[in-house]
Image 1 (cartoon, one colour):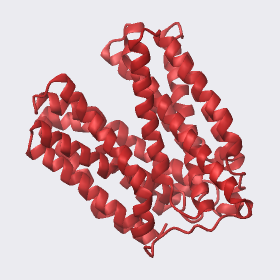
Image 2 (cartoon, one colour):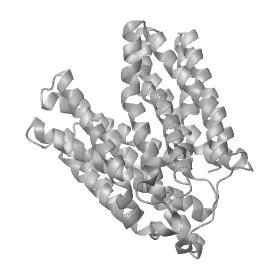
Image 3 (cartoon, helix red, strand yellow):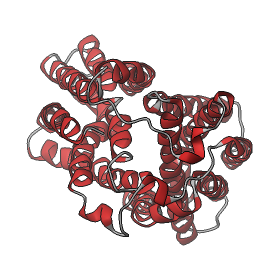
Image 4 (cartoon, helix red, strand yellow):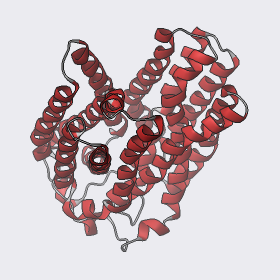
Length: 400
């Protein structure tokens, strides 16, 4: 066990809970992560549907997609102190039900302005659930006395795969898009309603933190973790947006093989997340992040130097394996910073990370426009290298 292993001392509200109660909380949290992934994927399946229903130009569609991101960022900036006050159970229920309700409305609103409003609410509620369920994940980790964060993020990945697969199958079978999204939303609401009663009891903020309001904005530890998360999500966002384009334009792969790049990356992400907790428990977070970021860098360099189908798919799989545990480890660290409530630490780091996810692919596109796509994606390798160099030092210094 690394000497930088986190402190798993449970607060008094959780100290006397039975082991079955703690395990039920873990199962409930897994369900919440799975549902969040399913809903995100169910919405993603219908981006072309939204474009066609409202006859949107590329610019108008970009505004619609950006409204989801804006809603998420606003939530990250404003919702953390409320979550700290009311607790994860209430916040997961409120955020999850709002996510389901707004998701069901996306394809039934009558006009574009209402679509923008609903998508902003969808992003806001998704981010609220995200912060609340990650705060709960940190509490369950502490209650169980061992890392589980990576596996929970793995459930989000599995939920995304399941949501995309189910959506594709149902739409191919002739189900109306609005009916599919309503069905996915209803299923999500049912699971959230069934899972949240098993969430751990609320711990008042004074039992877990001693910071004053606004302390998270003055915390050097959170800014360092947030900067690393931002760089890591530049790399991750690039894979979502550019892997298929690279396969098509540079590797000259056909449509099916080009799509396999995204699948290879996602499968690598899911597999590594289910292994990440054991590695973190055995070797520590700094060592896990160093090895993971180095693997991601090697995968991207290999894909760029060997632009052939097998080599590129292998490289993208290694990218998924390498990037998978960046956010779980950094989020877990953010929620253990001394003097800051878990929800506020997470919101700060996640909010900064979202900027990397939003603007990273755009920056890579700008480099590709000025030079070529290989040059653009070399930024991804550079980001992974920077994380490999900086993150272990920060995590080791913080001992979180």
